[in-house]
Length: 302
Ligand code: R5P
Image (cartoon, rainbow, N blue to C red; front, top):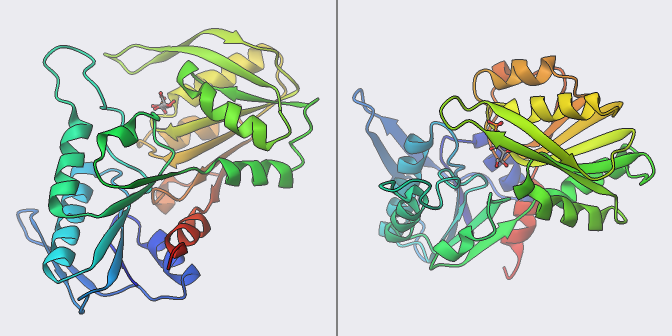
C-alpha cells in the first residue's frame, strides 16, 4: 500500500501514514505562474493499492483540481486501486436545486472524480445522508461522533442530569440522536434556525426540548461561525450556564475564529478533517484527530 498527499492537509496525511507504519510517498506538485498545477507521481505504483489524502476545503476548486490530477497520475502510472480520502467533501451543500436554473455542483464534482479514475472514497460526516446515493463507486461514510462521545466522557460531561445535546438546526437532529445513543441516551434538544440567503445572517426562531445546566452543541461544520454564535446566545438567554461545541469540519471563514472566541461558548472542539492554520487558532479551540479512524478503515481487508 502507498499513501500520497495533496497540499490541502499534509499534517493529517502524515498522521495517517504514521498510524499505518508508512511514509508518505513522493509526489511533485508544481504551480505555474498562471496558477495551473502540474502533478507527477515520483515513484512506481504499478499494481499497488494507493491512498490519496486531500480534503476539498477552501480553496475548494484548487484542491479539487489537484485531487483530479493526483488520481489521473496514479491511474496512468498503473495503480491497482486508488482510494481518495476526502475527509471534507467540498460542494456537499450544493446537492440539489434550490432555485430554478441552478447547477447541481456536487453532482458535477462527483462525475469528475469518477471519470478521473478513483476506485473508492472515504469521507466524514456528510451534510446529508442522501449524498452517498450520488456516487456509482463505493463510498465509506465515516463519522467523528464516536470521537465526540469519547471526549465528552473524558471531560465528565456525560451525566444526563446536567447535560443536553443540542442540534443548532433541525437538519442536525439525526446526528444528535446517534450521539445520544453513544452517551446512554443523553437528552436532546434542537434549535429552529433560519438564514437570510442574501446576507448569510441567521436567527433563532424557537428552541425545542428541555434544556439543562450544560448544553453540548453538535454540528457537521462551522463556516462563518454565525450559527454557533446565535445558538450560544439563545441557549444562555434560556438559562443554560455552560455551552460547549463539537463540529466535525472547521471550514472557518476569516471572521469565524474571532466570532467564536468572543461568543459565550466554553470550548469549540473540531477535528482535523480540514487543516486549520495557526492564524485561525483561538484560545477556546480544541483539536481532535480523525487519523486513527482513517487508518483503521484503510487497514481493513489488507
Ligand atoms: C447547516 O445546515 C450546517 O449544518 C451548519 O450549521 C452551517 O453550515 C454552519 O454555517 P455557519 O458557520 O456559516 O453558520
